[in-house]
Length: 89
Image (cartoon, rainbow, N blue to C red; front, side, top):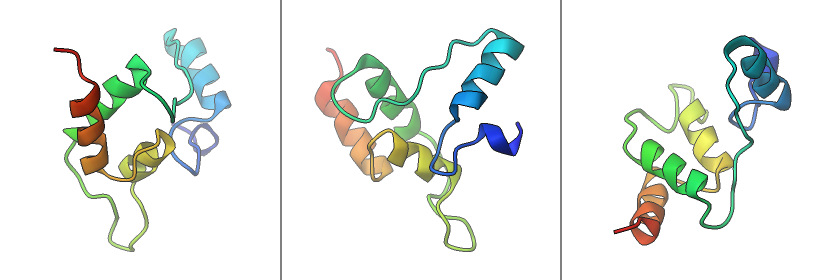
């Protein structure tokens, strides 16, 4: 993936979403950072179980940390709590 397709604040740019639509037929949508949207719940469930550090060796946030922040979560723990409060029985 080229640098212009990655957002510095996490996730893909509009150009990145357009690139994947053209290349793979993917219909990617921008992050939802508020509310109880099913996409946001699904994202939180996936990333709450994801292994890996939140900061790299230099102390900078990893892509995982940036993605969580972009979707409105400050940590893996907050994503887990959100899923527990909003999952369907």
